[in-house]
Amino acid sequence: MNLKMFLKEHRQKKPHVFQDACKISCTMKCETRREKQGSQMRAWCHSSCVCPDDSTDINHDAADIFVEEIFREELRRELTLNCPGTSSAQAGRAAACQGCPNQKLCAAGAAATDPAEAAELRERLRGVKHIVVVLSGKGGVGKSTFSALLAHGLAADESKQVALLDIDICGPSIPKMMGLEGEQVHQSGSGWSPVYVEENLGVMSVGFLLSSPDDAVIWRGPKKNGLIKQFLRDVDWGEVDYLIVDTPPGTSDEHLSIVQYLSASNIDGAVIITTPQEVSLQDVRKEINFCHKVKLPIIGVVENMSGFVCPNCKKESQIFPPTTGGAEKMCQNLNVSLLGKVPLDPQIGKSCDKGQSFLSEAPESPATSSYRNIIQRVQEYCDQHHFQEEKII
Image (cartoon, rainbow, N blue to C red; front, side):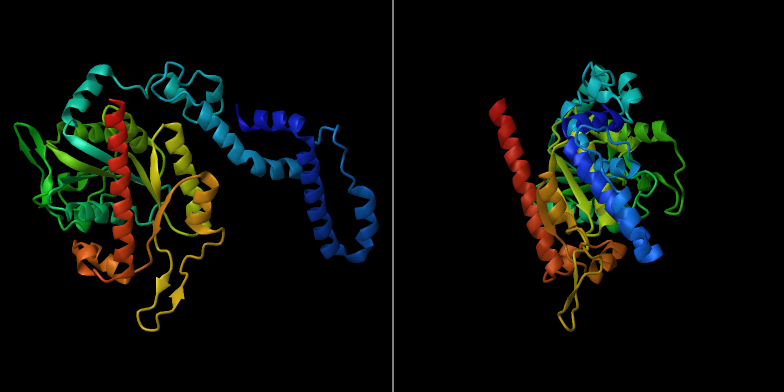
């Protein structure tokens, strides 16, 4: 069901909503004309702005636009609930698939995983206990920074083995942030070996395959997907407690591929990164919708750059004002967990540029405290998820 069909159905079911919308839109037009032409328009307004009754099918463009915004989230929820999933035989063919932008891809079977390939990936990732994917619909919100610090925070427990996989093919920043710029991937009889920051923290990125950090990776989708598959299939991950996957912004090829490939293994869920302003939240809503459609569990949302406390006067300022309530309001509306808010700290950027862990460089920072609380919540979620899976088995 697409938006047009959805609106037509709801116009019949809930005509009073359309009537109210028509009244509001007409009132807005009247107010605009009054401002332009003064009191002489008052008579026109009273005689012309008469909304149809409940039984009339309203053909008012402004009312349709108004109601479209009211029902857009309801439509998204309906599509999400009825989506058969990429692995279903009805993928791309079910009634709920009508109007979906990925309908042709699913119908062609391109989203399905080959059984032999799935078995190979499952075998390679057999030693990985937990998999966490870090997503963000918007670029520049601190997704790679969070991925790097999540890996550092988890690896602080020397009994845990942690791996960080960077699938941002065109903009790999993880090597720089982890202090591994200029390192090369080594190949052994068991496959590619990750590059290690510490004995219990390994990293893999396309950045290790480039001759220079300034080299541009100009690839189409299939080649990107092939490299992602190779990272999962050919890298000797060994026994790993946590595999953190850092993704590029958006909901396109790389995201579909990583979810498709990891469906053969035990993926715990996704952490979604945003900043407080509405321009970021708009894209994050799309990312949440993407997770629902591909049946990827959402661990929670992290709000980065959430205020700034001046180190001198201790006064807090909102550099990115949460004009629509920020991540907290969005999470309440969409029934998603808010893992925490991380304030701005100039030391975060400096630590990333130096390839150092901000958590150890600034242990007393309020941002470090926020990160540690968030990391603890991610660990608790993974442990609970693992316990539930063992209970089912």
